[in-house]
Image 1 (cartoon, rainbow, N blue to C red):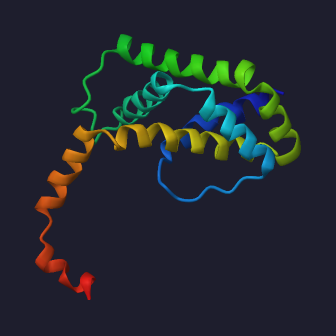
Image 2 (cartoon, rainbow, N blue to C red):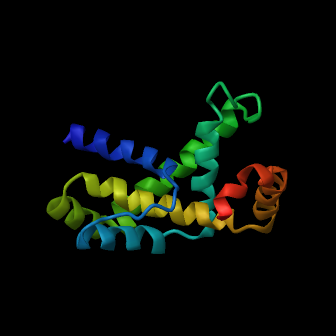
Length: 150
């Protein structure tokens, strides 16, 4: 039992994978993912993205950029733990049980990956983020990449 619980908790690391790569799950995993998404609101999803930044902010290459106190980190961690607990113990417990029974523990990764993508999309579509991305694009030397348009 404890091994499964620890395995499930590591699923949070898959929130990091917020690429737009297709995710393949079975029908029960799909239902679980739908439940996770429909059971979270924008506030929950914003907390998930804050947690991703908070965790990445501990990496030595970027830690000087992210200035969070231990208290602030603890609040962010607690918020995500509460969301995770609520989703798996209350909002989506039936879908999670069926998905685990019929499709195995890996279903946790794919279901939470979907949630991570949905949460990140809300951030990526914000006008300020789009402006920041466009600043980068303006700095690319397109002449050196001319071969790509042929």
